[in-house]
Length: 477
RNA sequence: CGGGGUGUGGCGCAGCCUGGUAGCGCGCCUGCUUUGGGAGCAGGAAGCCGGCGGUUCGAAUCCGCCCAUCCCGACCA
Figure (spheres, rainbow, N blue to C red):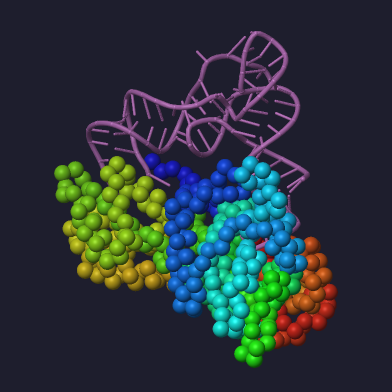
């Protein structure tokens, strides 16, 4: 008997849809503590996939992993003026330990620049100690007012790279290199098209000289910042007095970068590809790429399960193939469950298929059914997995293009922002005050100044000030 | 921190107005029958009704306080 879907359709309630997808796919659950989440095995598998891909790229670009402590002395947080102003209000602070009040409160890290630079002071003396290229995989805590699973939780997992360089040019090159690493993760592995750009003064990281970002568009046309790479200039070196002796024997301040991607990326992944039937995963991030569902056939027939297992083995995909041979669950039930979990390909194998030497291959992204001869199955599956990966990227990119507008006047700006929403490419005068006013009246923020924006003279549609390039406005998560 | 909800077996809910034996669906367990899009029958387990206090012979239900959580805003990866 058909049941109604347990997933609220996107056009009915997008936020509820997002929560339903997460619940049905068993990605995460609300924890007993406000704003915290439990990442369940299906969700953690996605994080592990992201970690593998990123960590490889970090190592390829010369970085090493280390681990710094969770607790930061209060005094460290206060060293860099902008940094403390930006982060202190959202920090959790430990005031008691071992049954008594602590002399100095300890901050639970909201990010690790301060503790890391306090150590870099000890480790960096000479130009021969540079560059220092360290990454850490860690959890951080930020006491946000309002939380959403994966997109914004009180505690979240991330990686944070912290590098030290001898020259400004080198630090800038590092910052840009890591932004490109993030673009590759988003686009090549997660099939999430992103725009690379940098943040305005108002939106940049507290303590940074310049913040680069990758911005993605979700299916409700809102923007999501998916990763950031900061050129910190000499701010933290100055705050922690980190200098090195150059080739000529002179003491110089060190140049710094930091960059991070968090479990928010999983939220981006969910919101970019999933549909009203549940999670949709790009094959390259799916731990299970193929599920084989044997269909038992009428009573007295041969047991089809060994055949299904053999078919799975023939695919040569190892643990990425799962045979769902649960005996008391109907095929329809299995189909729905695996669709909700986002498995890219389902292969059905029933008596009729065995008889005719074929299998039924069903794509999660399009629902298309293909009848494939067993001899060609391995090749076909590999090809379909590639197709799905490419299709999901193309689909997401098409949505973004469809909802990106070049805007020159205030009236159109306001209208497009409401309906249908999206990325508004508009001129901007460059004034922080004007930017703040726009946010106040429209709820849209400048997501970034795109790296590939071409020079173009224009006027700010809000204040009429002069502008030399377009920036991207959008409502954001 | 403001506005609006919601707390009842694992999940989703009804019951509350009009106090009187705690119910339904899904899920779970056992058995048999089933398997090409969410299977059927039979039997079964599982709940100090968010917490504390009050009213009452009697509270899931009425009153007060508290807590948690979700959604909408201001803050943010």
